[in-house]
Every structure is written in C-alpha cells, then in structure tokens.
Length: 151
Image (cartoon, rainbow, N blue to C red; front, side, top):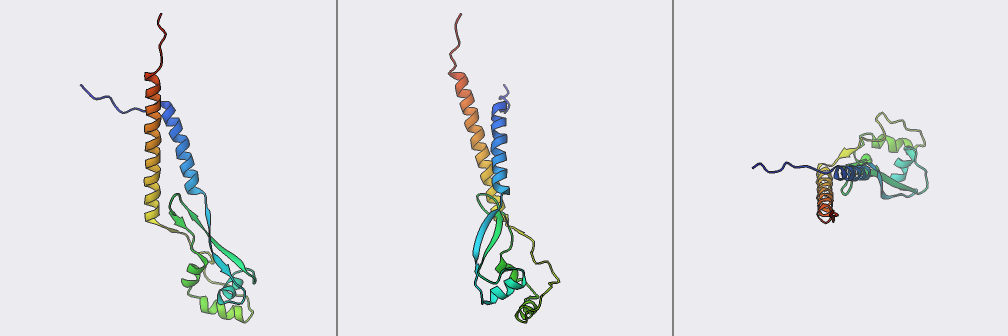
C-alpha cells in the first residue's frame, strides 16, 4: 500500500496566506533606531550642520528592517562619518562658514545582515509550520467529533 500523499485543507492554505502576509508586513516595515543626539558646539554638530541638520540638538535615527532580527539597515550617521573620505574638507568648510557640496552621495547605501536574514527566514518557516500543523489538527479533530444524525 502506498502512504497517503501530503495534503492541506483549503482553509489551512487561506490561514497560511494571511499569516505569511503578516510576516511580510513585519519584515518590510521600517523601525527607527535612536543613535543619540548631536549637541551644539561639538565636532559632530559641525559635520551635521554641513549636511543640512539644525545647529541645535538633533536626534539621530536610522532605519532597520526585519523581524525578529534586523536583516537590512541604513548606516548610522556615525558610520557614514567614519567611512567618509572627504570628512576633513567638509569640517574645514563648515568651520569657515562655507557651504560644502559633497562629491559623493550623502546617504550611503543600506547593508544586508546575512545572520539576521537567516534568523528571520527560520522564524517565518517555524511560525508557518506551527500554524499549518495546528490548523490541520483542529480541522481533522473537528471532523472526528462531528455527530452524524442517524436515520
């Protein structure tokens, strides 16, 4: 005899579709992460003001995507400053009160985090599997307990 082939009820598939949509929403929604503030008068405030930030205290935030782990993130302001080759020219121009026009994009591209991506995929698959097993168990259990009228 052949074992019965694997099948899912239509109801289970519909439930899985909504759960997968919720997981996609959770992973695509950006989360603002607070990095600190630029205090007026400090070196970072000089760099920040040359990049169009206000001269008084300003909150620094960057976006991250992914749930439960961060799979993709914008570089923080401090990471951008550390990787900046033109930083000395920018600071000198800002200290002299001149407008500095950067020759590179101000916003660096976001970077992927493979470990966070793997955690998110494993979590999503585990949640989908658990929902599928629970839904199938409930549907089959309900079918067994249905009282059929006798005629």
